[in-house]
Length: 260
Image (cartoon, rainbow, N blue to C red; front, side, top):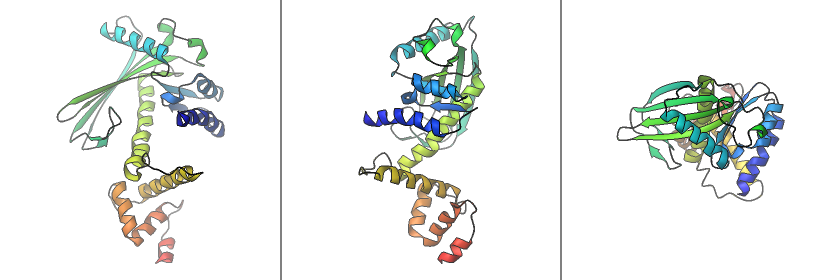
């Protein structure tokens, strides 16, 4: 609980540090707070906030409305719909639960995004307390594997207009960061399992992991996974220097020649 409380405190502080004017801010359910929505709107930007059971009444209202409207084929409903189908080869992931699994070859993901103006819904719980609230969103993600199909339904509230393609793109980019950064930090660097607790050590090591991840991603001479690059850097000093050089703003061979 303390970690969650720290996150709720950290988000407003981070928003004050950044120039977010004109941006779309996407935040997981823990950051779905009225005060955070107000701060985003006051900064001249828009939000897309994940809606889950931490706001049980509002979540249930939106969920029930979409279920009824969908069962009626969205008849006489001002709904905007976007669909995207993607094919991918073998990939490690966490969908739909937090457990790791291998999706198998030729994974097909179908994402359907439904957006509806809140003005078309019955009055939502504490609707006026959510600054800028304009649209409710339902995202259905179906993933077809070689031996099974999994499905996940997620709901969001947003200050953006009812434009399914634009909102769906922002949500997809949000999960792209989750999959490419946070998932990699956990799987490659075992961040979630870290036992480092003392003083400022957790923050310091978190920063070092991100520096290492950025350096490994920028190094392009060895076309392997981040894990394989990391192991190669640990065993090969010349390659390690190449990784360090790639992390510099203007990568140069001078560092490599100096360290030989």
